[in-house]
Image (tube, rainbow, N blue to C red):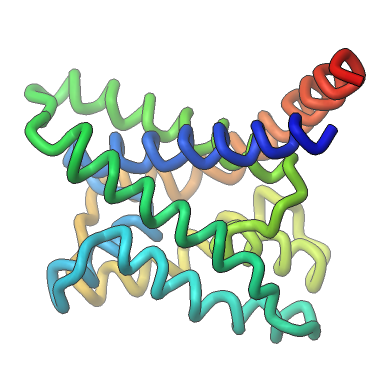
Length: 204
């Protein structure tokens, strides 16, 4: 089962970061957290992935406060991996690619949202320390009893406000992501959990 969980961790992060990169490339407005990182990158410097890591470090302590527990320092491995993969997709794989036409860009945006939700739902099954952004969703869920959908949406709106202040890449896509990513993660979560348990039982 450990091998299965590790596989879901690696593949989930690879999928969600590729999805996030596609939403940035679609140029219709990035997701709130990615728009925040991109805005920080434009305003201060450093790569988008670097700001993912910096923001993850800050959220590590915010989540600990919400949950009234010690910071989950093992989560550093998760958001460092996520930041590294974001830069890999943006600076290596997709560097010279830009979709043209509003329809094509819209399709890329929707594909990116689908992959983000799928990737988050998959890597959370691993039980490895969650990315602080996703742990914020879980922290709000546990602290206030909000559904995963509502908790995720609250976090996205908070990041959206900060991204607007930093003049990050905000657009219609940002609003679409902010209000759809939570429901989509919730939609994928249980089916992927059952799928992982089925694979785990086969590999025993």
